[in-house]
Amino acid sequence: MNHAPSHRRYRRAPAVAALTAMLAVLISVPSATADVSRGDSPPAADWEWPVGDAASPPRVARGFEEPESVWGPGHRGADLVVDRGVEVHSPAAGTVAFVGVVVDRPVLSIDHGNGLRTSLEPVRAHAQVGDAVSGGEIVGTVTAGGHCGAGCLHWGLRLDGVYIDPLPTVRDLRPSILLPLPDG
Image (cartoon, rainbow, N blue to C red; front, side, top):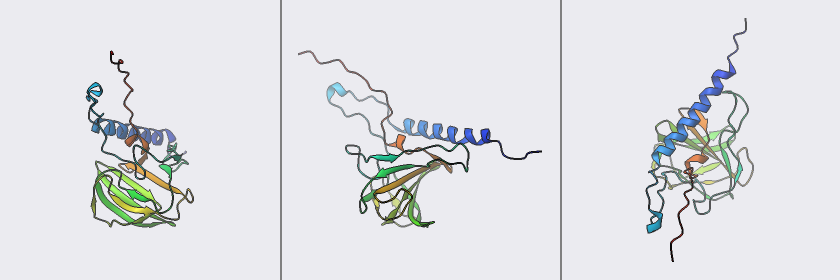
């Protein structure tokens, strides 16, 4: 009798978690009620890039690749192209939950509440465990180490312990709206 766990059971959990996280992010974004014809700015989300900004976001060297099983191969985060020494910002408000070395790389983790936790590596931390940080606050600098080589920041995001894609938190997923040209 084979007692090996079914891969189907594990495949659904990350997919459901990712969908739940994306819905939570979309729900947290204010509704698109800005009147662009009056010059209002579209509403902004509460999440920011950990390096760069919305006007000049970093290039993504490697995106999230959901594993087929809990221990299966995949890429549990996004690798952002960035120079060593660049300041790293908290992508959202939270509390610094971990600062230390994991395997061979310096890692900083931030608990954002509601089951969401960011991990950033390799980062020389300026913040300490227990520090409350606001979105955009400097928490460290990119240093040497990490799995993606020099010139890279790995940004992971977990929802209730399951890795999900962090990029939907900073990319506007609302549909584009075409407005009529003004008369004149």
